Image (cartoon, rainbow, N blue to C red; front, top):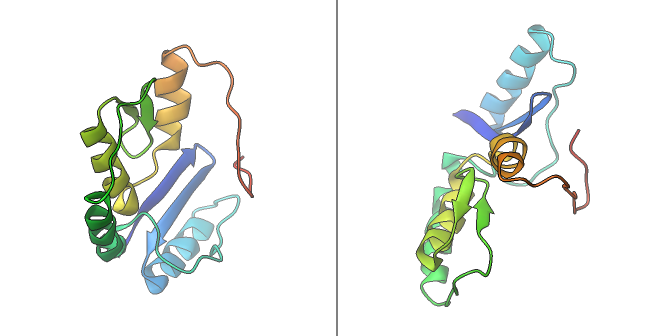
Length: 128
């Protein structure tokens, strides 16, 4: 089992799943001429159906917290759209565990069409 985990842009799509399936996807990508295809040093198959047990834990944990209405819309990258209610935010957090990170649609399309002109990457790595 292998599925798109992160759609970061035209030059970078990350897949996730069983190790054997991901290794096969890497080999297929190389055979098809991908500029770069490699296994990432991660300890779990993030953003795919194999994470359903973690999504269930997230759902249970969120029953114990209170999420307030945001002051500005939150762009949920698993949905590639703005969400505005606490229920939508909680559903998005749960869906994010097994769902594809749709950054290309969220950033390059949704936020750009909403008038956002500056994007800042925060984190340990970088996305080309």
